[in-house]
Image 1: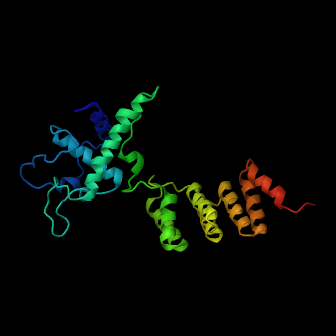
Image 2: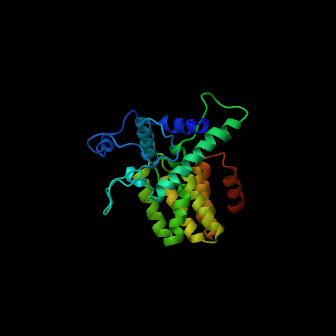
Length: 254
């Protein structure tokens, strides 16, 4: 096994469970284990359990089951055969493994200094339990572009209900602020303000969220509301110089 592939294997196996979960074990047919076939990335002599444990890390990293990449016989008209390459997700997985191997075995090793033990990347580094490792703001903006603000806001609420606390998405104030700023740049000021206010719904004690909302209100022509929001931002974060300067400009002079 080459050094690069060893590093890639270690990156995955380091977070592997010592044995398959009960659900995964139940997928095994009775009788002797099937011989390993069609190994195009992993070495031909890889121990069966090591391969299975590594596959388990993939399911956890992407939040999927074996059928995501393999033909498990669960889909109508299919017969169980894990060796088949009929699913594009399996083809992509091999490409992703080569990418991980290159990062760990080529690029990170060229750094002049490294912490010990060395930091390595794995599937979970980017995926965090998601099949597509997209940032939340990108997901929301994609929904906005395809179906409008209401659908995008509903999607955000649903994702927050499902994933909050899991680490899959960042539910801090930055993503919705980014969405609002992007829409302002597109001259979609009214829609931008909706996302700023949605941010305040979930982060009412965040100075940056109030400051961002103030900018949206000001762009919408509601100076009175912007002043109140900037005042709230400064009360929560007295070091917010941008909000303080805005108040000096906007508030009537005595």
